Length: 469
Image 1 (cartoon, one colour):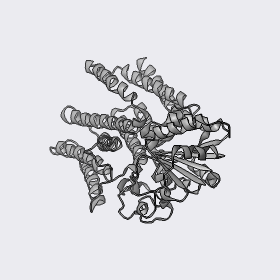
Image 2: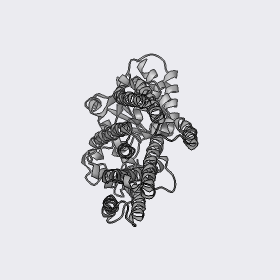
Image 3: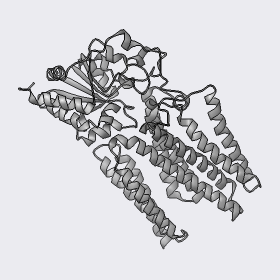
Image 4: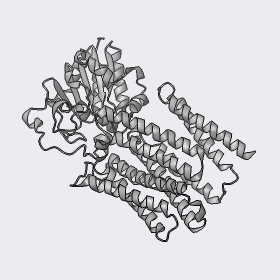
């Protein structure tokens, strides 16, 4: 009876996971999707817990309590920290899979060698490699996103890097084959721990050559790895629900990675092994042309006189937590009859959908958010393009500068607007490490300062003005 209930609960949880992914496709049903996903996970845990073969040790309860103690504070991080929090979640998932795989192999080796069949050992090896490389890779990604001092933000490259990386992974795979063929040999334990060490090392080597501009794609790829490690864990534990959930997670992460790579005009191998973000010493545009600075008063007048304003948000908006001030600016402009659209680049920010989430938090209508492909044809008719903390995603060098690390990446055509107002904290380059030609164009005016403060001043200036557009 209990087994039948557990099986029915597993089917229900699987259905909820599928509906959750489906509902997350539309902002109108996204909240329902989150509730469905959480409900499905609670049911999945319960379905696993009630099975008679599960040993209900007290320390399992302690582990659940510890999970709540860690998880609740992680859920309360500001939206600006969501990318690194997401990376940490991937790290925890990878670590769990790696530790479960290690435990299963050790128990099989010491207590029940008969259970180390070819299939099961293969699943354990795959689980351990995927789990531990996801763990260290995600920790490195979180450190880069958090700008931890001892983790370099720029790509770290050296001669023969690709050979070393592929060599480490190939060696781990070769040792894995040996362990699968001889799971109980006298040397198999040492070989297994060597696989663990190589997977941990590969996770670090995988991320250090990747620059911040590629982080949205990296986050989605790590999500895919975490899902695949869960699939392998499901095979090891003979848990169909875990296989299904992991497959959904892994496939959705893979699809998202493909979308991100297409948005950047880059291949998987280019992202994972290329150094996107190497600082370029040849970019001396700022020395050849002057950065023209505008006052808040002048910027407010330009906005008031516009018919179409296109706001282009970037990571600078996230760092300044300026989304609520952006909403106030949106209100001030729209009540004057000015059309305001938000141009969303697929890789703006530090994770897929970063800008969408921030703007949604500020209750900006989703209908005002326009994807890059849809907004670009309208940019020549745009009176004012307001760039808020965006850099590489509006750099015209991506179109023609073959020596640039962003060459070929589709951009938002901000430079084609009649006037560009760019809010920026300083003259420092973006994560790709190159100067932005947009900022020295004849039709571009700079507003230097914290985005939240600058937009707040613009709102005050507009609120103090008289008359409607």
